[in-house]
Length: 193
Image (cartoon, rainbow, N blue to C red; front, side, top):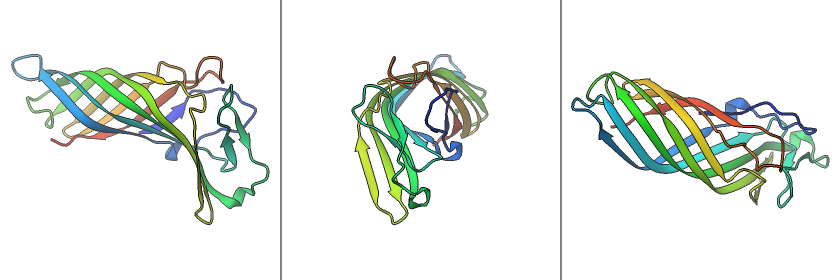
């Protein structure tokens, strides 16, 4: 899916490259059960990794670790053409909980709609800078990101292809440690039986 932050103002240009600010969910274990005799109504849950990547449009953008507030800055010592990538990655251990309706007994046939919520706890965060010569630099810190994600989610699909939208109710940054903004994600899911 594609990540987007709700609008906020900042003295530093932290605009994201939307096409490269991506979300991926990797299911580790999934459990589902029928709630009616014909299998049209189902409960589904599981556990997995929810990975958010944020690519910044200005490759000179840096985030400072161990700061009391979210502290992006433009590294004026770097020529804009010297770096290829500046990004932030956050990984969450996630538990999705969904109630689903399927037009056919088999979930990989017909129309399906899932409504629910994903609950996530941030387990890892890092920044990554890639220079034009291929050198990589990583910093690990929480960068003032909120530890929790609570994201109401809707999925609508046909056969093995679904489209989804989710909105994180928790602010992107910890309270009082940066501008108020929330994350929303739009994307697609391939379902393998």
